[in-house]
Length: 112
Length: 432
Image (cartoon, rainbow over all chains, first blue to last red; front, side, top):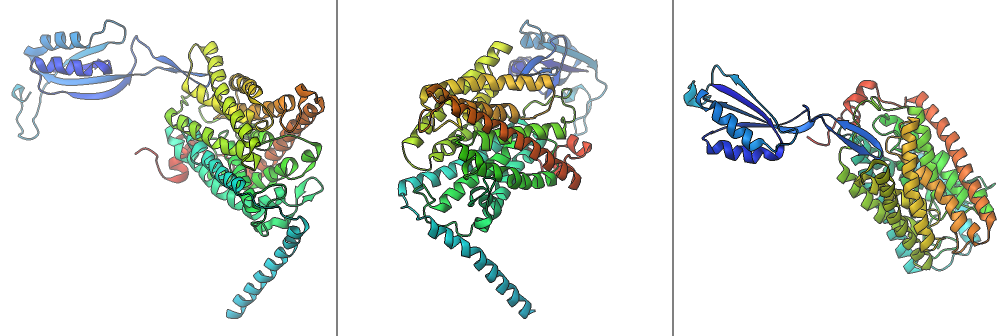
């Protein structure tokens, strides 16, 4: 199993969710986060005082998937989240050793 | 026990009758004119308008500009000052400001406890003395509340309470007496229609001293101190603007042509101030901002205040345009100089009030003549008014701050400042 974490532009969330649902993903967790990468931040000015805002608002998606889904998820997610401009975000994939369904105590890929 | 209660009651009766004595005499000396119902209605409504400037207007204006951990502490400053200064005014402040003149310096204690301030017409007007007293009360309250913007986010609450009362009694009341209560500046012929000197120079320069004596907020220039809720500030701006019609047009003390002139000048200057500040920042930083327009509106309003009833629409437009850009420049200067007048009371009220007092000496044409209407002497008098207000307020505020610092300490602890005033001073949070 794999754990997919994706940092995307907030306004792309609905599009990404739709696309992932279409290829059979049944669940995900979403968090509003702030961060910076190469996009850096932006400037804000209040009565002449400039502030460099380094941390840009993003959305973090987390989903656990079966190994067989890895390529499809990367392709779908990447396509849906892409605008082509700087700041589109990143996808991180790592191995996932165990998943437990709390209600029943079941484990393994069947839980996903 | 019963006996001592009786003696106490007797003592109270004796003291009250002593107070009442001279007051009846005052009423008999001046023959009170007839009450005009239209004037009375307008001044009472105007008093409520000015209340609305303070709470919620100014409270929201300031509240939106601070960080979310200090918003209740900031609203609290304005709210409790309104409550306290109102009482101080009724008990003592009004008498010091508007009691019969003693040597051009101060009012006598004749109206102590507002005894003898009744329903008869206030001399020279068609409104009850009580209406005049309560209208002036609202001015006394907002003036002290304006200062709080300079020491926002770091003043100890006990220090605030003490400072507010001392400042109102020792600075505001004498100043109001000098300019409006028959004191030496009034005798000289100084023009201050609704408080360019009494309200705006005084709060603005008191704010400068407060910012310098208290020092910068912890983390100033390093941490982000971005306003936490600008829509709140814009809502406050609207309420201030609305209330300002009572402040300025109400200062005509009657429902008449003078009130209409002040009303129109006030509105024009507010609009011109908003446009001018926006233009100045657009040129300088490349973007027009909502906070800039809001700040410019208040700058225009503060600057037109002393001249509102003395100038025609076109000079009001000039005054508003100058106010917006000049007050913006004063904010930029503050940033360069590095003092932390947190919510820009100095730049908007101090600079605006000073400019407005001088502009009145240039443009006055209704009921008085300024320099441009052939009376250069008025400009000189206005200059004396502005400078003497600054000197009195700066020295007086400094002394009061030092006394308060000795008694209770001015600033919250460094740890409390990091936590925020809401939790550290009041044990509550605005947003849960």
